[in-house]
Image (cartoon, rainbow, N blue to C red; front, side, top):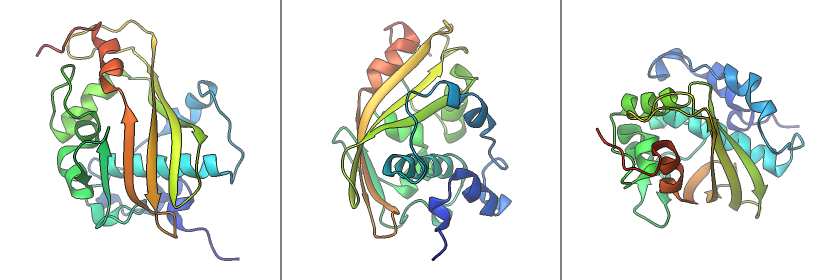
Length: 211
């Protein structure tokens, strides 16, 4: 039996296999995902199921785009061919994500959010969700090579967001994504469909962010 490729072994395995110099600010810590997330998720996927595999691939992808500096080291995708967009908008490459930051790319144009620096974008949301901002697959609608899936993103609003005070409520965001993968299940293209303004508006009381 052939060995499972690294990018299908899960986020912890990819982190452990990486050279520490690949990370922007040292080895990332996902202990809250192991301690807090299991009690808050709404789905349980059998090991080896398509849902579990898709969730794991996206977790690796999120870790790499958030913490690894060079797209050439991202094992979750074919980085030289990868592209992504939001709600049918313009395409962004792997290098665009590395340069601009995933939150800036994935939120796009919104009256509730102004683009930040790469580190600033993470500080904003880590500050608003100090106890973790989690993601789970709800349902996989189609198998590879074009994988459509529904997802949930959530966290407890326990920290300040651009001057707006926290209320301790669980903020949820739901969406759907369509991913094209190659024969090795590496990402080639991902289209996301969701309403970022509904999510951001819940952090601001419906008022546009004021800097």
